[in-house]
Length: 171
Ligand SMILES: CC(C)(COP(=O)(O)OP(=O)(O)OC[C@H]1O[C@@H](n2cnc3c(N)ncnc32)[C@H](O)[C@@H]1OP(=O)(O)O)[C@@H](O)C(=O)NCCC(=O)NCCS
Image 1 (cartoon, rainbow, N blue to C red):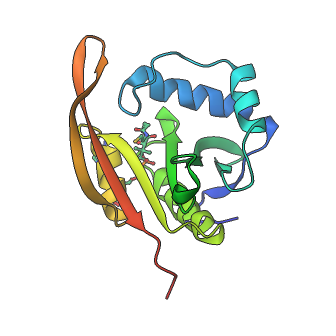
Image 2: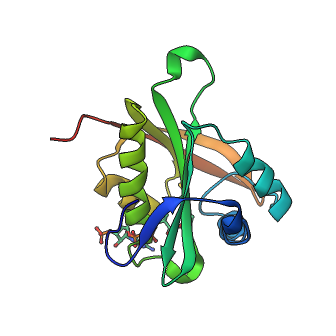
Image 3: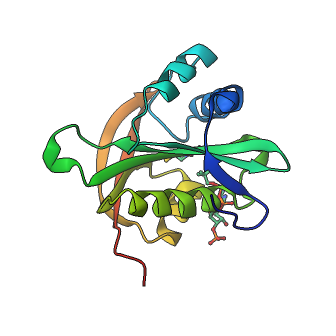
């Protein structure tokens, strides 16, 4: 689908489920990415992948034959008026972070969102997630605002940043 550097990003399939589950659980355990706290099983992730519709794909990032990250376009809000806005997720395996995989996934997610005729991408992220903040800024996301003390992780309040990027047509 897309190949910045030596990372290939393509649609995820059922054979990617073990890697996707491992990488998602790392993100949950690291407490940098999500207010989710329950680790997932492969069967739960398989059901999640099966339930995706055509407008909300899951992408897998591969390097040297191994899945090192995944991303997805998610339903922002099920009301029809929101159908041109997508939320998204991006998760990179611990051992592959900081080496361009997140950037490759963002390139592919933005291209997919445009192809699927979304008008906007939106996301929620932790302000203290330095890699995430840097990645989103680099790809033109603007800070809409910050929910103060939006969740509790391990007994501590967490602030959540809301960001967005309009998907102007490519030049
Ligand atoms: C956040 C995440 C997706 C970024 O992906 P990545 O592959 O590590 O990032 P990249 O290597 O593509 O780098 C993207 C930018 O962030 C910067 N960056 C990477 N790691 C960083 C860190 N730990 N601190 C600060 N900046 C960092 C890079 O330098 C790069 O910016 P630059 O091109 O201006 O130098 C990844 O680290 C990750 O999956 N983390 C755990 C899960 C998570 O936080 N997901 C996001 C939820 S909102």
